[in-house]
Amino acid sequence: MNEELDSQLSAMFDDELAPEQCELLARRLSRDEQVKSRWGRYAVIAAAIRSERGVSLNPPLAGRVSAVILTEPALSGSAAAQGVRRAALRWWQPVAGAAMAAGVAAVSVLWLRAQGPLSGATLSAQRTAQTTAPATADAIAPGQGLSYVVPRAPAARAVLVPSTTLANYVVAHSMVSSPVARRNLLSAFMTSESANAASESITAAEEPHDVQANIP
Amino acid sequence: MSADASDLSLVRRVQHGDKGAFDALVLKYQHKLVKLVMRYVRNPAEAEDIAQEAFIKAYRALPQFRGDSAFYTWLYRIAINTAKNAVVSRDRSPIEYELDRSNEESYDMQSRMKDAETPEGLVLTDEIRSTVNAAIDALPEDLRTAIVLRELEGLSYEEIAAAMACPVGTVRSRIFRAREAIDRRLRQVFEGGLGRAEEIG
Image 1 (cartoon, rainbow over the protein chains, first blue to last red):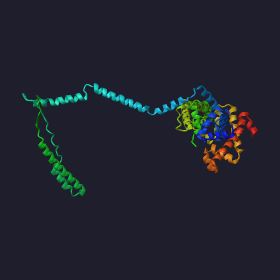
Image 2: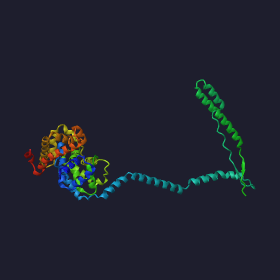
Image 3: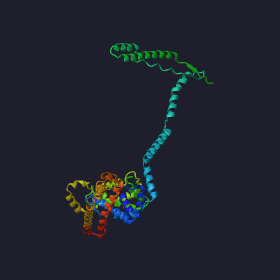
Image 4: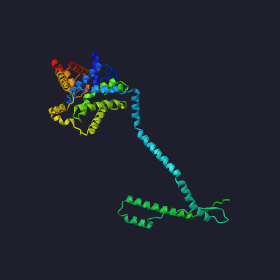
């Protein structure tokens, strides 16, 4: 090896060599036993300078590892790529598992709904039949056509606080409440009064009436 | 300069079937890993076994390494898990390496008594250490400062350049020259066998 290459090896040992030069030198390092020995001695020098007590500076470790590795199958480019791909795919394996579990659960629910003794549709149909049957039976007089009775609109909600009580309350507390709060309360009171009046007029207009649905 | 480019280039080679590149990674990190494992087991021989297991696990798991973290960080995690599992399986409680550091002499004695390494191995370790120390002492001041700042303080070339008020290229050259000077002596120890350090010194 020439001096320039030796210098590059020293820089590579310190991780101070450009990546492209590292690529070239790594090839030589893996094949040339002399270069590998020099590299190993650089590591020994580093360990000796660091005074790593108790650590053998000439351990048989590298030779032993090398002997075991020789019996191992060589890693191929495809194996490395496969490993990377496997590692990349690993993250979504739990996601896929959860999605599969959710799918199975959804299918089970649908199947149970389809196979159950009283499905929602059946139940509502039965209820409709039960509620409408007496009404239609009452409405049909013998000799008359079928008719449909529009049910009475539900009564307007009862006012929980009578207007007079509320007015008294406002007057009684007007002395202690702030002007803004008082104004808000009064406007709410007036709105509720007008709403009550409107609902009463609607209720009067919506008296039950028959819709004759004559069926031939 | 991209951090970890050196390790990453070796890792990519291993991932494409080059087993020799993995040797380079083991050579680089074996001492660090053994030291790390020794926080959990006191016996250096046992620590070496665990480090060996961690390296083999790392090799087998390397297809999954994508380079999101530094290679050593990834290896470090494997080693820690391997050491913890080893401790649990042997029903031992972890022993912090740092605990006995207050009395380094006593620590040395304890570790040597439990060390399964051969006496020759121990002597060689001592000889390597003394050779490296002697070589560092013999270095010119600028080379010694550069290599010590790098290896002992873990500074980057840029930080050393700032500390020594010189260009990054000069730092790179100084560190290389320091390593070469130390390596020249070290090579003689490895090649010449025991006792060479005294002759060189």
